[in-house]
Image (cartoon, rainbow, N blue to C red; front, side, top):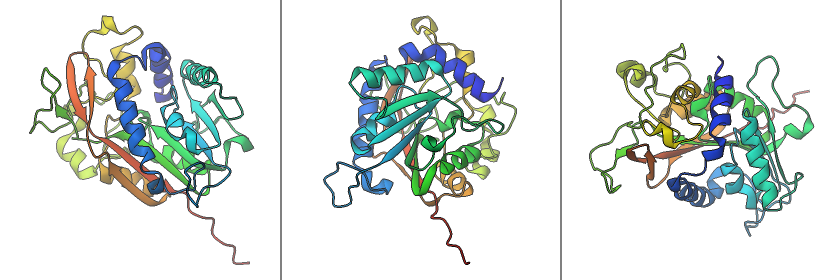
Length: 308
């Protein structure tokens, strides 16, 4: 099964409970607040910021949009949002959520598609090019080839447009005690989904990790996790399936230098990778963790001037 198909199967199955966990609302709000405080860092003119740099038209592409976290974060500062996801159920939830708050299709709308399909990337057409901002929220750890993914998203930007992603920092977890308090000195990559390398490739090749670190420690020999992991209490999670979840993940987290490398290899410039100032608290079926979120941005270069 292809990675795209595995993602489609997994996210179709969990759409109904995706936003239901109590800690999600707090994590989403913390990410929202942090990114909205970094609008200048993202590096494009936005709308409605009461700044002299405000512009009248800002177009956002939200790839692997899910139920729309990245669209909601930047919604007040853009004038048009287009979402794409491989999961029909997620796209339906994305659009239903937008319509429920009175937002029209012309303002925000999602479709089913796969920009990374080499033979038939979808969707196509003028509506799907020339974006000022492309976002991918906690999605790159689901992508088979992160360099190819970043290149494809870069191509949907206008010259000077920016790709901005969120994901998890490798070795950025802290274990928490029974009361949810962080256990100091327990740093590592702890959330476990038993990622055992069955995707048929090594993590040292193009997945945003530091290659020397990968080869030294061998990610196939460690237990990892990410924000969808539920190692226990499967019966409490309708639609959740460990095998589907594991099949959808390529790598669970990234290093700062690794993301900088694959953004640069994809042809992006003005690349910067930062982490949130504080960890976010998450629970996974009996496992309590504080996780570090990273943000990365890179710009599509301005077109070279013709020498003719």
